[in-house]
Image (cartoon, rainbow, N blue to C red; front, side):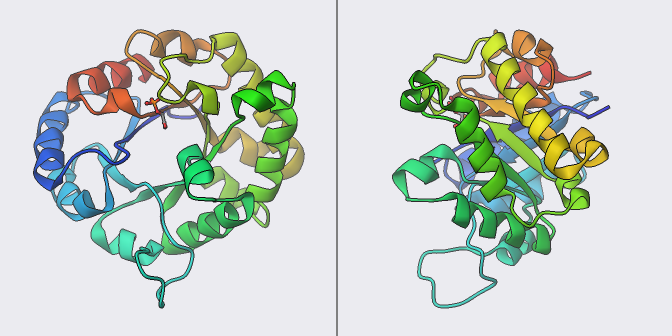
Length: 252
Ligand code: PGA
């Protein structure tokens, strides 16, 4: 049985004081919530302060990106050990905005994922097709390539500890979420591939989240789709009460 996971991706929203105020409120709101793991990923600048607010609570702090080297002359980049020491325990890798706006590839995603694991961070590796790819009926082939190349070199034991997020690009920030049937089809396919490539035991333990316009009013039906183990939430995570409703909707 996989514990559901709800991860909030703040993207480029919230200053340090705004993040701290949000987490003070969220911490109190989720104090008695069980049966779900909770992650909040603020911008880099707020990670350290955020980690202090959630210490000894049921909320973990995530980052939204990382560089694969430990250190070096890479102006503007942040490494996995730096994130860990700042208090992050999770990191989002290969979000579609990074792939489309910042040129990330399956190869860079793969390097980042391995660097995260070495540093003790849980990577949430994002995959998903664009609208164009879906229209051309390439969805499952795109997912196969993203999984094969993105997870290259991963052992079964490592797979069990990472998280995947299926995020159809056309559903992100558009208000047009995938139907439970569309999400279910993709998640079923992903689980089959993980079984095939990493074995039954490891694939059974790897959580696969859905992402793309998840809101309090659709989390219930999305979670009911087989093989959906939680959600990666953008816009609706910015309001603690809406995020609480999503967290509650996923708890078992
Ligand atoms: P959204 O973003 O919930 O605002 O659609 C999801 C994501 O980008 O992870």
